[in-house]
Image 1: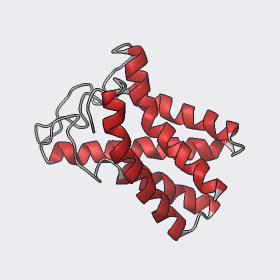
Image 2: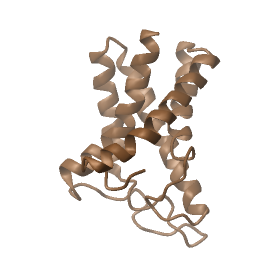
Image 3: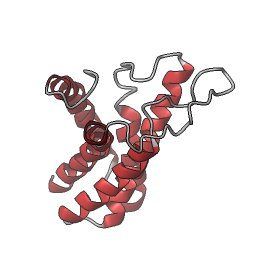
Length: 160
């Protein structure tokens, strides 16, 4: 159970790092990954909120957090890197659905960024499918309820 708690913490750190970076740094070093260029469908590839800064800082933060929790650095790197990849997949799908950047899409906002890193983690460190699904569900529930609080406290710019 301790490992599951540590992995949940890594998911939360990966998800929260870009939000905190935006809060602390504003627009500094916030270069959109898609350079604001449209995809062939005329919609943005990811949207303005997906930045190089966030994609780089999240894996770095999860790597440091993993080491502080007694996990291997590569465990943190896997969780952080694939959480960001899952977040990009979610944004890509939302843009194809013509949802604006920052729009709410419950479960599409949570599942790819938790399921993808846990799936890859499971390939290397055998987490177990039941634990993987449990962590994905717990992360989603926490994220859904925590985001409005972070918005109210002025940490997030949107309540979702």
